[in-house]
Picture (cartoon, rainbow, N blue to C red):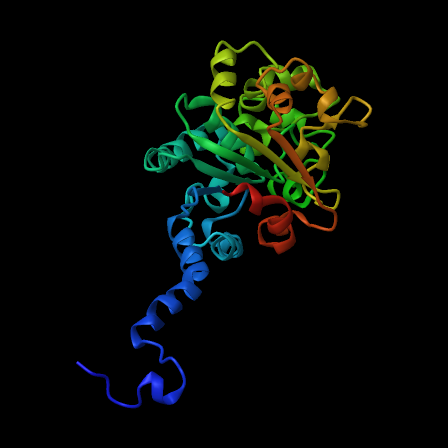
Length: 310
């Protein structure tokens, strides 16, 4: 069938076939199409968030917003257990409750999950990681958590124990009654180390600072993580000393001894030294961040957290 309109010979120009426009457009759109397809197949690992003392899941809306903005489509679970005053319950009880809630999330994630564990929640997460033999946690992000213990006169201490100060709280914490309160489970008085080691039902056991028949198994379980990220800073105002968030702590003169000189690291009792030698231990120190702001500060997220949520 002849085309209507002037022929190419008469016009002096070659007329482009109308069908050739589609391949041309597709060729121009290939980079955009490739980017779209790449984004469509990216699947970020689910993120599990465990809150700290006196918190609840509703306090983490900014963190969820940060994650959704940088890693669209990420499934984020902020576990709604032991909220507010219930966070004072013994830590092993909390470990059991959070573990039961989190394990099904792990089972539904064949490529693993990430943990973001804030403040006291960082200790709960260590308990979970130590006691699940088949967990699949990729990045364990410890966000301003008293990993080496707590010893300071803070507003939290005054609120929970108004009749005590740091120098005499051991009278209560290192008793069977005191060990029913979560704070006492990681109260680490550097002037009464023997009492801490013999009385702490949680941290001293988790650290294998006293004989623990589960130590070898717990270490093996903990070392299933691919990365440990420790985050903290000098202006925290609650974690005392703030270096506890990096596994540093006081000696009996209240001089901070950094992580690599701590006995738990030197003896590698639960895997810190192994993680470090593997290149799987990272720290992120940021000044100017108060304790309650770590999970809602966009600089903290972009500098210390975002890159680990792949």
